[in-house]
Image (cartoon, rainbow, N blue to C red):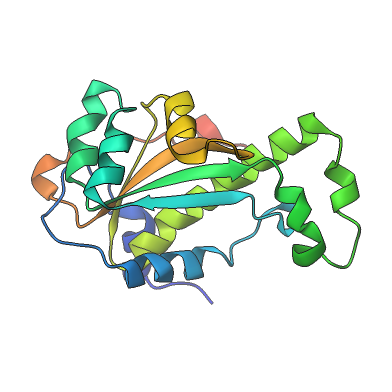
Amino acid sequence: MQLDERSLDTLFRTARTHNAWQDKPVSDEQLCQIYDLMKWAPTSANSCPARIIFVKSPSAKQRLLSAMIPGNIDKTRTAPVTAIIAQDHEFYEKLPQLFPHADARAWFAGNQSLIDTTAFRNATLQGAYLILAARALGLDAGPMSGFDNAKIDQEFFSGTSIKSNFLINLGYGDASGLFPRGPRLSFDEAAQIL
């Protein structure tokens, strides 16, 4: 079933990366709804390596802001929520539960290169799914790099096998903070059919 034009606009064509935010809260229930929607999207071997921290409280925000580059501080401080998208480099320990019809854990155990590549690739996919889920549920998103990964890892994931990937500010965007829409590459510039 193809989505209607309005839905396609909401997810892609008119959706924007927001840098300014309305002073309107995002509830814990909304964050659970986002996760419960995005979790169904595919990852290789159903690996589901993304681990997400939704940063909302003032104290957690302060810890997060200490790792941001100057240009990302204000938009992160004013966003109702910032999602830290990270990947668990021991994701394969959950494969007996997530991929029970094969011994998928054995594919990864002891193969650090495969673990790292799979964790990063699939957690990045899951972060993109989170953006689409947030948009589908009426929120705006502002994904970003521009932070000190090592500092985020120390602050939020110390002593674990989890490493930060990227951040997504979530809330209700303030259109006055949007930059003009950037161009995109045409099909012929970016793709080919063989």
